[in-house]
Length: 206
Image 1: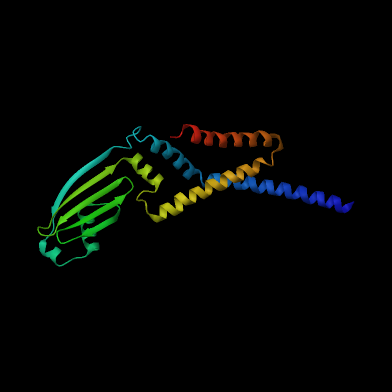
Image 2: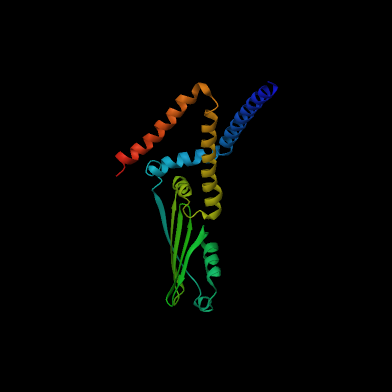
């Protein structure tokens, strides 16, 4: 008799502690990921409707300049050419492409919402530069997609946010199972929401 009572008490204690653990996990995962969830929710809308807040608009600036032919003939190296241009014109982003042949150098700088293309004539030292920049909405849209944002942003923010959202969803689902009064309606709602997504995909997606 005592063994049965102890077993019942153990299960009740485990039930209470596990429910408390899922509640704690759900609350603090949501707070940890609050900024990321808000960011990806807002940019999901602006990305789907880029013209609403001017996200598709670009400011294009054409510039030109000249290097010493002797300097180019001494083969200064990719890095020195790229950094000299960056300092001279305050260019942003990483050098995404650097190509050269016997006639010219070609460089492309990229960052979210920004691009700079440079063509340098090796014979004359003259170069042309086109800078394309976008507003904050376009920058955030590129960050949402991980376009030209670098491996740190892609791994820590995009992948990290995905993991947080997954854990947040699963902990919320697990927490629902402890609430007997809302368990049935909650599970039905989850199934209906999932079926709606599949329905839109099957019937209304081209």
